[in-house]
Image 1 (cartoon, rainbow, N blue to C red):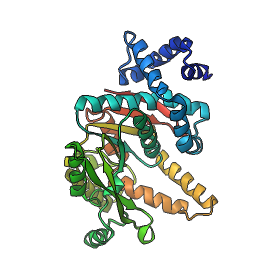
Image 2 (image 1 turned 90 degrees about the vertical axis):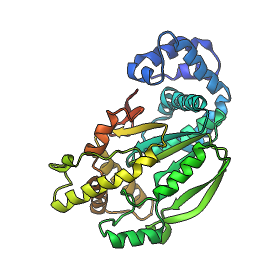
Image 3 (image 1 turned 45 degrees about the vertical axis):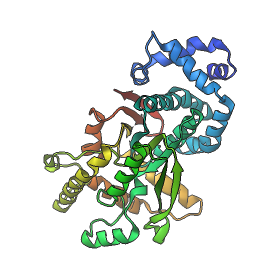
Image 4 (image 1 turned 180 degrees about the vertical axis):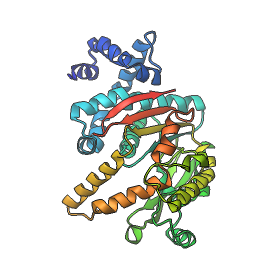
Amino acid sequence: MSNEWFTQVLTADRSWLVPAQNRALVDPALAKTFNITPENVVDAIEKRSATLGVSPSHLLQTVWTDVSHYCQTHLQISPQGILQVLWDIWLPLGMKLASVRQDLGRPMIQGILGGQGTGKTTMSRILCLILQQLGYRTLSLSLDDLYKTYSDRLTLTQQDPRLIWRGPPGTHDIDLGLSLLDQIRQGKSQVIIPRFDKSAHGGAGDRTTPEIVNNVDIVLFEGWFVGVQPISPDAFTNPPAPILTPADRKFALDMNHHLQNYLPLWERLDSLIVLYPTDYRCSLEWRKQAEHDMIKSGKFGMTDKQIEEFVHYFWRALHPELFITPLVNSSSVDLVIEINADHSFGRIYGR
């Protein structure tokens, strides 16, 4: 596919307008997501171009410096593809978030739900860059930043030896998250952001030096179960693998129960985006590939067997088929971005 029309946008050649209009309308679900209709398409595309026109070369250079290599190696997107995704998805999404923030009249909390390898970090990074260009101070916050301290998690493991890894429901300081999000939503000018160092204590991880930020406009709050709701215990009567044994089912039921404690945190979300693999099992292969790449680079990495044990542990805690699939069809989600096995984007739809 030629990116001539994109070049014309950047050089202010208005001959780009008709093909850009056609592209914006070709996918009805995507057009609906970003409120594009035949009646407003000209205005919408011109606004998108004007946004790039704030400083198109600077915007693209910034995005290119930070994420082009990552996208090409991890998401398998060509340079031309990055431009395409920037125009079709990231830029209009950034503009949509800015519009919501403006309508709210207060700081916005945008939830981003996605598992291993779905691109949460990449999306947050690019949206931060775009929103910065639009004049909005954006904070990237991970559910990981809300982990309990190392010492608290040691105590927790003594109480429940099944919590062999950090990550499942129950390993986070929910009160810390509520206090932080409430301060931001209420417009407090300066807030202290907790940060987590995964390398501390031999990889067990612990809190590190917090970050002090001022005048936050938009929070991109991402995590592997951000926004996930508890489900009926009946769903575990005949659950999918690897929930196989009575002990597995008990663990899944207990994790489902712990999700109740997270609901006040999810209530602070103004919107929820789900990065949804077309096959949840892709996350296992993505993790294996990531570990293989680490080993090739001379770093420590898990064996395939260790990776399978690790991923299956989290599937036992919150199985994607039980928790994520129903969620994407609910009114709780504002935007779904499907992720194909090769990390490319599939269907994009919302309400």
